[in-house]
Amino acid sequence: MKRKQLFWGFFFLTLGTLALLNQYFSVYVDFDLLWDSWPLILIVLGIAVIFTGKVTRTIFGILLGILVGALVFGIFQDDFFFPTGKNAVFEDFGNSSPLVEKYNPNYEYAKLKLNAGAGKIIFGGETENLWECDFNGDEDLLDTYTDVENNSVTSEIEMTKNFWRFWRGENKLKIALNENPVWTLELNIGAASADVHLENYKVEKMELNSGASDTKIYLGSKFPLVKVEAQVGAANFTLFIPKNSGCKIEVQSVLVNKKFSNFIYKGDGTFVSHNFDNSVNKVLVSFEGGLANFKVKYY
Image 1 (cartoon, rainbow, N blue to C red):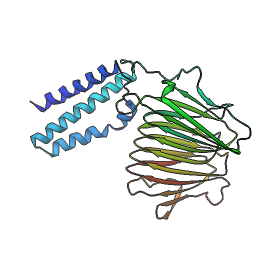
Image 2 (image 1 turned 90 degrees about the vertical axis):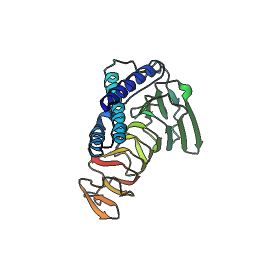
Image 3 (image 1 turned 90 degrees about the horizontal axis):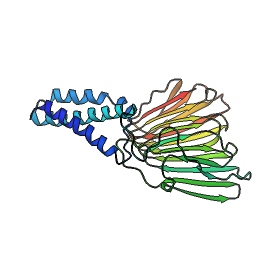
Image 4 (image 1 turned 180 degrees about the horizontal axis):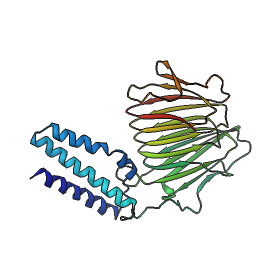
């Protein structure tokens, strides 16, 4: 069989399989993530040109057909040619009674631990409760636990199951926190997209443990010293900090982008912002990752 026939065969096979599965499951192809990975097509083509062996070029022809088929499916799905599954919900999450944990004025310190697999996670907003969680799926997929000790409260939200999905899932969590306590946040996510807005919260510590994720975290100036600890795999992680905050970064990886604008390199993977010594508010970042794209930006 000719390589051209293999390409088109696997292209239509991938496109048809995803469309069929989408009629019965919650299948979601993240078009943005696929589009950002378009250089893979050039890499596959380059390898096929370099290695002229029949078997090698056949394999890469198949891979290219699958990749392009998934990309086209993502385009159609993004334009609503395909409905996104029987359990799908779009940007309005739709729960009339979101999960909540009641707030007690005696809570001075609060910790929230979130365990989530694939999906989209959004932090931000105001609530009179300690926290409020809006979920686009079945609430039975979430387990919650809260423990109170003196003036401290610890809560845990865990996603117990995931829908079947391709590349990255469509489960969506939207979480709002009370602005009064001093917060410690622990975010454990898999192949997820996280948009974490903490500008209006008093955050003392932020822990991120993620796999193949795309995470953006926005810190505020409500607490004088914020510690950020991140351990990521093959991930994109961008940390936004206020322009009046000083920042120190410690990177423990040789496969991470280590060029940070407005930072001075101190050696041993340590970078310090120009305004660090004179800043009232400071952010201390410890980063450990695999093949990661890590950025720190001022806003």
